[in-house]
Length: 193
Length: 193
DNA sequence: CCTCACTATTTTACGAGTAAAACACGTGTT
DNA sequence: AACACGTGTTTTACTCGTAAAATAGTGAGG
Image (cartoon, rainbow over all chains, first blue to last red; front, side):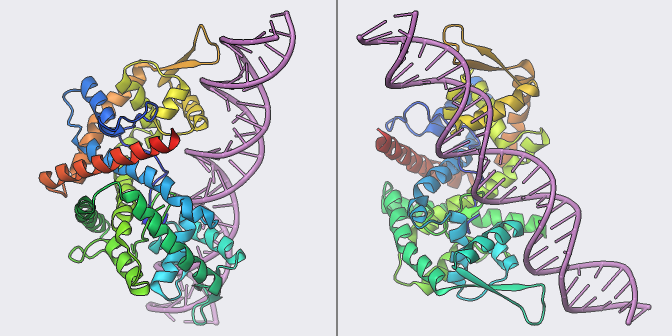
């Protein structure tokens, strides 16, 4: 997964939405339609969680689809971009293990991506001199150039997509998501510990 | 996609988070740390979109991981549950094509899932009498029982996970997500049309 | 009736991720 | 020194999803 996104496969909703029928902008989103269906079948259930979780999942799916456009133009998947981005933003070499943690993916996935990115000349590896188990990965000049070239486009694209919401709402949304995410991450950390 | 990250597979964040270091509950979420890193490398860029898209992606990844627990106990993947749920909440038979649209997945994926679910005795199919190309799928009694048995657990689990946010914030978040999703879906629909 | 164009569904080939096993090395202990 | 154990990375076997091709069937023209 990309550092930023981490979506399971795109498009799984807790609720299951109705894309078939064209969305009616005046009546709300597809998730609210699904929730109404459930309510009419099981009126006794509290469908509150679907209104948040279903929408987060659906938004993630839609945003990802839209968002990948500038990346794909550069021939990169989101996962690959996240890996390169982790190297770029930390500014120093990272080991495969660190990259896996940084991009929320398995070590095996990182191994495969590094293989491809190395073949494409975007990253280089060198072995650690003290501990020969570990490798150190860094961006090549081409890799750094690619990231720096794509990032502005990517951000501009995302800005455009999000511009359907007024800036005030964007700030509020970012704040609420930060609160939710912070507490979820704390809780997960607590479970692990 | 994500402005920052773009992880397609589960867990991709627009920003690329730092799970390696334990999250510090007091200092914010992993996404804000990633955004700070980007800012220090490229101070001229507007990283605003990452604060929303990165967090949505990351939340989706975390919630899905947590959320799937009750499902897996019943031996169902999220995708399978979505398919069964679509049949349950609409209350009538659906064709494979309708199921694909309803669950936001490809027809091929639906074909595979139907095969498995049919073998497990959770759904049944019958051919249309007029148009022999189309099939009609319905839940068996076992399938309906399974969905009705799981759904309350699933919702209770989701309620517990979301309880890290006070109810007022939950409502606000649901509202903002509904607005975003409604407009995104409208825009996508407009692009298609 | 035959054929062309279109639609619904399934099949095929393949890409990408994961978990678990396999490797390859350090490190502490005796 | 030798061994057991832990850790970093890669390999293996497998699942699942997709895109595109193949299959099957309808319906309008001619």
